[in-house]
Image (tube, rainbow over all chains, first blue to last red; front, side, top):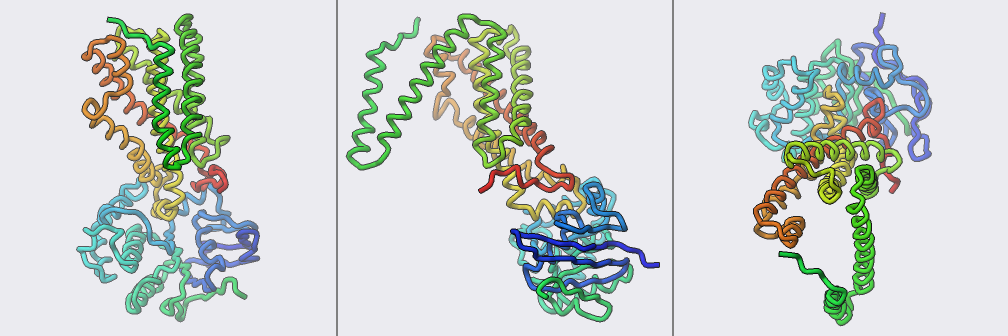
Length: 210
Length: 263
């Protein structure tokens, strides 16, 4: 029996009095890799934000493990799933401190992130010296990889990824996409225009734009 | 030694000094004449009323009247601190008011019992100026801090959302924005404190010196008040942010759009 993780049911999004998404329905089961494809402004990012309760549908429902997402479940979802927005501005200060800061949160305190940190840096071709730089001085691609690394260090298995390879070079796009798509038990909903995500086993869902 | 009284003719000659800026503005076509004249007239009327009012207040020296006046000051301070920001008064007034009441009341009690020691704060002529200084100074800090706090979250929404998605509780995600706000609120006071006595003599000290108090008494008042003001501002800012945050966020932890005034 398939285990349902997220389900969009008849979701509509109205933005500035224009309906940009109407009757969007999508069930996502455990282990599925879903790629949302559509023109910019089609509401894909808003759909993804709904999964963690940062946005709410104007009509319809979004449910997580068969429970409609409400104020209470939203906080639980944020602890259990990872969301990466397309905006890489996650804070300021030295990268190492920024990462350490995430692991001072009560819910992450017990995670031994330091041991895995170097492994991920190497995996995504980041120099260890990057950790001692000011986050704001990093390039777009470096920021994107740091954000990805933080979400991996959190050891979650459900991912909502919004254009996380946009600023990476070709080889690195492949590397990141492969990493997320290759874990059989990971559930991934990704928005991307990059070919690296479009491959066998990915479920491609068109959004908006007709 | 008594302080010389300023006669009506003296006030007249002081006002005559305004002729200099007015003359220069006129010659240089700087359109500030009306504003200058109007502002000083307004100030004079306001101060005259305050003078009358304080005379009555000091005359009666009635605890009930004093507390009533204190309430009026706090009401206005809370109103000003919300009005000066692009925030919705109806929503945020009560928590801001509560922050001022708690911060100022606690400070006054502490100041009365442990700093002044032999009391005196029940006297209108001590209570009103000291409470006024505490309020006036924490008002500025609170305006800066609360406004910066909410604007910082709105401007850097992605940082806030990222923190939440990394597993932060609301308080944990708000902490960086609180730090930014408190820092900006306290920075100006620190700058002031650093040059005090060298670059300028604070108004209260000048007043006490004019009233014939010894410089040592005047500076000790200044020192204890500056410290009290600093900690009152910190308490007030912290409380105002904590209390307003209860109504500024929805159950999902998202900032409610209606706490801001429409652009």
